[in-house]
Length: 174
Length: 174
Image 1 (cartoon, rainbow over the protein chains, first blue to last red):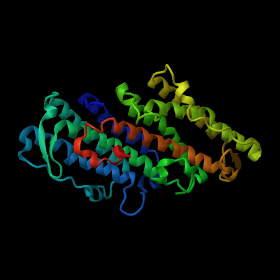
Image 2 (cartoon, each protein chain N blue to C red):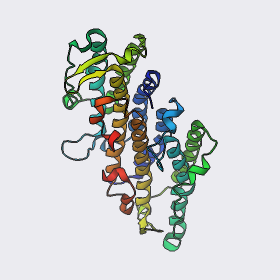
Image 3 (cartoon, one colour):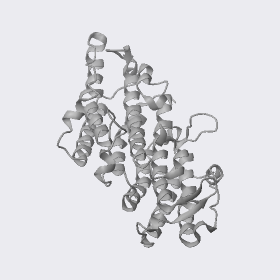
Image 4 (cartoon, rainbow over the protein chains, first blue to last red):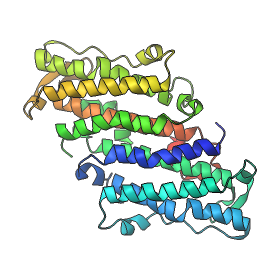
């Protein structure tokens, strides 16, 4: 499937609601448990999405549009949320994420980007030359990958409870 | 984490809304594409969840409560939805799933099951003796595994669009 900005925005817009519906009514034990040492709980993942929306996707979009390949992107800190989320509740994080995402998508739409703009390039600290289209496709895909992660992590909390059915639940074993 | 019926019901109740928010606004190309031959699109998965809610989880619950191990469960048909969903739109399936799930959870709550009931047993055609608690834990986990699957399948539609970032998006490569 070819990247389409309107489709990607549609998906990016749905993610805060998806996470709210999935997580807000569940007990904290389910949303704060992870897959073992140095892995993330759903709570940690929401913090990571907030950090991405604050420091990564839109700042990099602006760098590409304003400076092109002249400025290498700041590396993304994948552990920032472990500090930033401290003392907050999950619903506070979900609200913060919803607000940030709405602001970011409004700013993105205001840019009125064209198909040609999607070919504009920036410098990734590790990959080198990347296009704006690749980065925005990654933003949407990154949301999906973390919804998959949250589903997997929560399903694993019942790995001993499902008895012999664990043989059929692929994500429990991953 | 120990199985808790109220928690599981909370999760089971959220799934139709989760799927609605994730899928209803996306273009058909994204929700009807799969991972290759003999794999399922998000559309197919919603049909599979409908079939499970019609023929599997609650009928088996009733068998356990009424007949115990005297009646082996009907095997679950994993391909029924490929026929049943024909000619329907995704939003029709999402509505059908939401209605079925609401009815099923109302019936489940009306049973006023106790922790002791969770130890009652039935005969699975493949696994032999299983408990009601294991089966209801599986119902919730099964929802999560299919939300993970839908996220993975949709992320893969952009696998050529994300360029070098595919190295970091684990679900694209699974």
